[in-house]
Length: 505
Image (cartoon, rainbow, N blue to C red):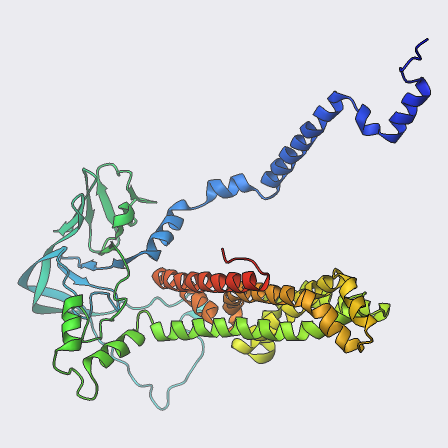
């Protein structure tokens, strides 16, 4: 007779007790991913509501953001056409114009005429000295009656002048965009549309017809802003038309407007440096050109490079000192190296204190203590990284293989020799690898803490951003920082790969 192989009820209950996950229903397994998905969606919805992301996206000024990005890779020429009440015009350019001291761009056409004009000038007020026996009172006239004295009208004088004036100005942005100003009439053409406005030479602007999509005016009579996209924009006021013509590139990157090489082509500059007569009798043209590049007033290359070098040195010195300080302390924090629980906890809590305060906060503290400069940045990096590296080093020590240490002990080696030959060979590559990573990371961090006064290129970058007009200088410094980070990242990866015995990727 064959025995039954069907498990009994007791056996089934024993299996269920030992392996409950094997008997879970398939519906429960299907329900778990669904609950996780619902939780993730609920969290995202809550975050959207809590941080008002929808409102922020709806009210964001994307036009200004686009303008800022365009300013990174372009520059503006800004002629201002001033309009007098009699219709006479004059053209001026911004201070330190990229075109130099006497700008005359081909895209601005001017018609000039010599005319005799009558101009009203304010007459000099005659000031009478008070008599010796006159009484002086702090009370204004009619103050006793509760009324304020109305100022007398300022006298004017009419003066006739014969001068050259601009009677017609044409500004050509590109083949689709242009502005013409003549006889108090401003005509703007863009994308196949023509829009006309009249100005009074004072404060009022009147559109002749409906405003196109690229023109805005908040209230009747106020200025009209014309937006032409990446090519530029313009502001039309009652007495002035401000032109903002945008060009791709960085203006005067090598030579500023005060340089004798300004406005010359690359071929002309090369010819002057190699074969031309000396511009400065005290040095060669090559030395003069290099000096003009370094001391370019608009780009300040020498100052930017010096600040960048400060940032690199700040990151290196801060990381180096932090590694040297964390190295002996980590042996006291490791439980398997130092058996004293009090010493372990004291050093670990010291590490927690140093790394719990952000590097940015340490930079603010040391900037107040030492004043602005690289010393504050080095101190901030040193304090933060001492805590972080100390914690990482101590954890690496606690995870070593004790067999090597026991082997060195078995031959009667001194305690220092045990650490030297039984511990260091295991952790030294890890220590060096982590220090190299932090050195590369601190090159970026040193830029951020420099913005609060800790020195380096971060402070220079923050100064350029605060002007709200030197965004091309910001782009230049950002590119320099990216290049340095890429180089240091490659060096750090190569060194770490060699230390860990891997091939360089």
